[in-house]
Length: 150
Image 1 (cartoon, one colour):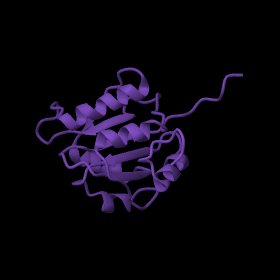
Image 2 (cartoon, rainbow, N blue to C red):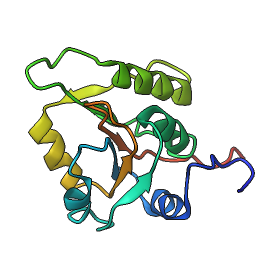
Image 3 (cartoon, rainbow, N blue to C red):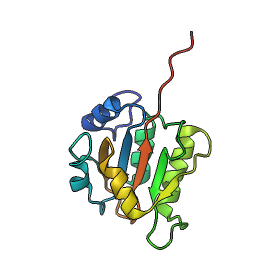
Image 4 (cartoon, rainbow, N blue to C red):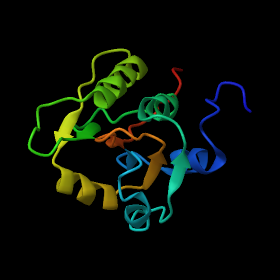
């Protein structure tokens, strides 16, 4: 345990978050996502795990990871096949965590399922959660941490 760091964030995840640079994507995926095969194609090349709900994992990750303010797709969700505008409870829960982390509304964009897979393969890394509800898959683009005021 470390002070000020969410205990869900294990050493492998902390290393990946620290190594990521501005513009790198992070995928947080549910248990049904092909996480292992997709993770092998990412920059990191291996799967990371946090066995908790999607919302809990997003809360932990966004406690350290800044979102990219230069793009409109810094937070994204996998859209439901055939129902792109429907927002299931798991995605509503994650939206609340994003808004809380950013201190303001930060709407997620939706990405069609196969387009989400393609974005995931180009990501820095994939974190598979213990989320069993469908469509608990999200993409986050890392922003920057500004220098301290002088």
